[in-house]
Length: 331
Ligand SMILES: [Ca+2]
Ligand SMILES: [Ca+2]
Ligand SMILES: [Zn+2]
Image 1 (tube, rainbow, N blue to C red):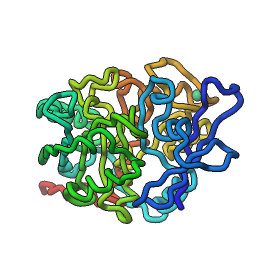
Image 2: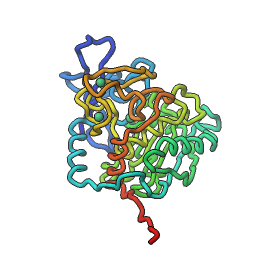
Image 3: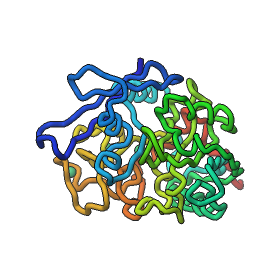
Image 4: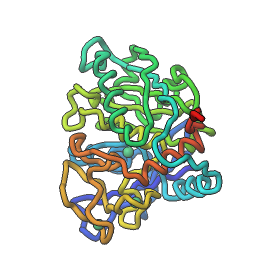
């Protein structure tokens, strides 16, 4: 049994009361989800808990980024221990590996933009944003192929915890490449528990056990040019690829700091909008609201820190075999 803790402070709860919801998944293949408020007996799919767990504030309160990538404190600690024990240290400086191949999969319901039939220009613009956002690390992305798949049910209902296992089925059918190849699927997250999500991703350390699951699923209208303002400048994919290369949310672990990166200030809860100067935790200066791994608006997100870049270069060297290529020096 895998347990995913998903801390969230509800605005109508007493200020001192932090709600912790608990996922209990029997196994990854069934993705059955049990949620409960802390201290309650878990029960299957209670709407408010599920909203909170899966969709964070965007869905609960109609505002805010919804990222479905969650990890329990226990699993994070185990993953971090494994990383420390097996860490491959990438050389300092820009990563010199060749650009990663990106396999894009457009799941659509019909031929309209609302139905998920995004034009090629949205996708090429998205790859450009991704390359710009990761440029300071040296990591690059090369669009290898775009597959267009008509499936109204997947488009509408597929999500990280869908009980019908559409996520698993889709990836099993269409995923391409190996550990160092990025597969991106665009869907609608229209109904059910995934409604309101912007995206979710798998972590590098999960690849070995669940290779077919590997990749990013994202909302089609969050592509650059899409209709999901203020989340339509391409930062959903930057954020999700941040997870895919091994980064956690900047607010992971709250003020105790849990993202395993020294130079990101601890943050008590996700930031929404662009609250300049917000400072929710003692020490470390203001909250990292401009970081790609927070929940701020796309226009507010501008950077990874050097510590995050060091971490993800080592994560992808360790778990995705993405390493600097041997450079021939002139004598
Ligand atoms: Ca930190
Ligand atoms: Ca602070
Ligand atoms: Zn996220």
